[in-house]
Image 1: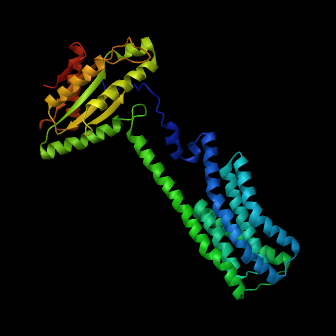
Image 2 (image 1 turned 180 degrees about the horizontal axis):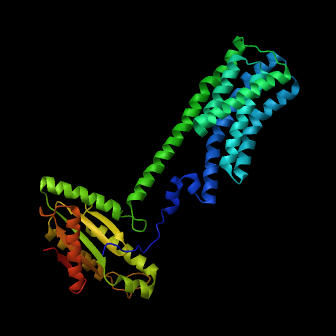
Amino acid sequence: MFLKMMNDDDFYNDAAREGASPAALSPDEHHRSGIRFARRNRLPRTCGLAMLFMPVAGALVAQAQAGEWWLLLVGWCFIWPQLAWQLAYRSADPRQSEMGFLKVDAIMAGIWIGLTGVNILPAVALGLMTGMNLMGAGGVRLFSAGAMLTATAALVTLQLTGTAVALALSPLAFWLALPSLVLYPILFAWVSHQTAIRLAEHKRRLERMSARDGMTGVFNRRHWELLLSQEYEQCRRYHREAVILIIDIDHFKCINDTWGHDVGDEAIIAVTRQLQLTLRAADVVGRFGGDEFAVIMSGTGAQNAIAAMTRVHERLAGLTLPCAPQVALQISVGIAPWTPTFSHYREWLKAADVALYRAKNGGRNRTEVAA
């Protein structure tokens, strides 16, 4: 009775796959994930490079660098962030492209460190900004690779341009670099906070999806049995009343075969709705799959459960399905009150299942209580 195939596809599949590893994602999902990754880096890169313009420009003035370096600086600080985003967005693999662009940022930071003669505060600002971006995007591995690229680019630039090393700290360099040193970590922390909020919300959705049936929204079998085991322990410890019900839609296979699975789905949803309307808010409804449901009614006895199911029978007798008004919805119900003789919650579940078999063998559309 319990091992039935589900009649629906879990419509939560698309959302659930968002939590899968990149290797497990379909090409379209991998592409969307890469775009989200590039979008997260867009704001830090745009604001960060804009902040770096003044401290790097001040150091370039001190070094009297040629005009073409100024054009490159303007392009890197104000054009490159938008170009990188557009290239990543249009790439076949946005994540891989963005990882490459982060390495380009590291190389460019090294070039500017070299061109400014390793001027202390601009160099620190460049290293801090690129290092935070690399660590946030790829962890220690990407950070280490980026640090090596930055150091190599700085050394090569010093060698090729013949720029004199100027480690001295001037008041102008201090004030130009201060905003980026203070504001960028705050910006990066805010972006990280927003990402953490989205991840927490995604985790809550996944937790909900893992506990719910995709078609009806009630608990799935795995989570319902977990709740049943907890209820069993509470009953055993505190000797309180509780009953469980196993409910089966009568002649469900005939409904599917005659009217199609769409009508079968309507029948399942209709029965779920009537259970939710009739039972208490505290009663725990679950779907075992196919046309089978289960309910935990805590703190009540068999008579109250019988009365509730009588109301459900009456509601279903006057119910018609929009796509198949000729279909008469009926259910068979097995009820098992908790008793101290059960040594495991599965024995309790088995007692309700036996009562359900007795209801079906007794003519269906009825409720039976375990002996």
